[in-house]
Image 1 (cartoon, rainbow over the protein chains, first blue to last red):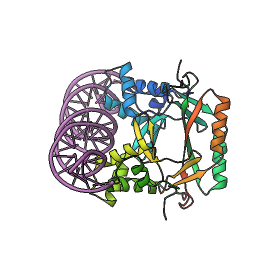
Image 2 (cartoon, rainbow over the protein chains, first blue to last red):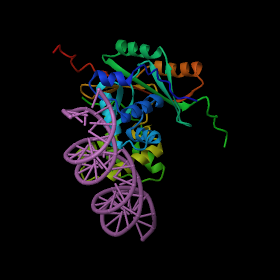
Image 3 (cartoon, rainbow over the protein chains, first blue to last red):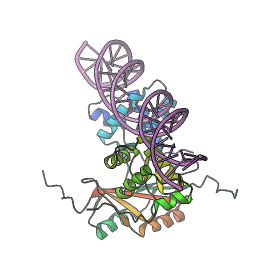
Image 4 (tube, chains in turn orange, yellow, red, blue):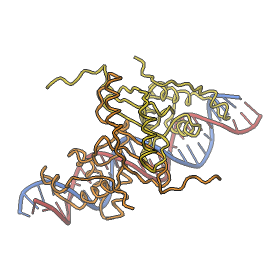
Length: 148
Length: 148
DNA sequence: ATTCTTGCAAAAGATTTGCAGGATG
DNA sequence: CATCCTGCAAATCTTTTGCAAGAAT
């Protein structure tokens, strides 16, 4: 059950080299973790996943990789006030379905997002930029709550 | 220019007393900050706003109040992995419009949210619970970027 | 008066930074 | 082989918890 719902479509090595940065193990592993995860992750959770792959990679390097990726526009850092979560940049129309049971995250494309954008433009004086939709619930693989 | 876009509609004192908790200054101030803010806030930002009102309230009490409010269902704690933000509980259909310029947050009700819920139910095997929509952009009061 | 809550302080966890050695181009 | 990156460790900031004193009922 691969979780990757990300059409990654970004060659990390090319991106790094193009901008004069070096391709290193730490950066590759962090990128792999982000690509595989499919949803916003906090730095600590990214770090622990990175460690599962290669425990020799230091936490500080994870932070440095994330910061770099953000500068390159490869990941999006969501700052809800001052708490950060990170995920690979992806199209607006993809919304997040987060299963409360198993933590699995799916992406779902729907024209309702562009539609929502237009609705906002028409109904308000707000000029929308990014739209972030997150839905919690139960995925198809997790059994419905049995009556206790 | 009141920011409060929240139809609060909750009497904190009643909620507390009903459940056997005491009405204290700390709890009242934290509640006021949340009600006035209008969007997800992290604990540190809540704490600093609380301190602006009453510096004698300890940071630990802010955390304890938030935890209590969450248990009472008065606020919603959004956990994106392990980072938390808090806001007063409100109806699903209200989406967040966050101005990147001035930080102002507006709520906007739209039937597209319930519609989105139905669309998910129909198109996927995911059973949606809470839907959280956040839109960044520029509000009507902030001037469009002038060509540099 | 009773006991729930708070403030304080210390502990545990998250994030940033300086520096010397190691890997990359 | 020049220098970019990393690991380490220390510093800083966020969040949690124990305990005795202070408030709310």
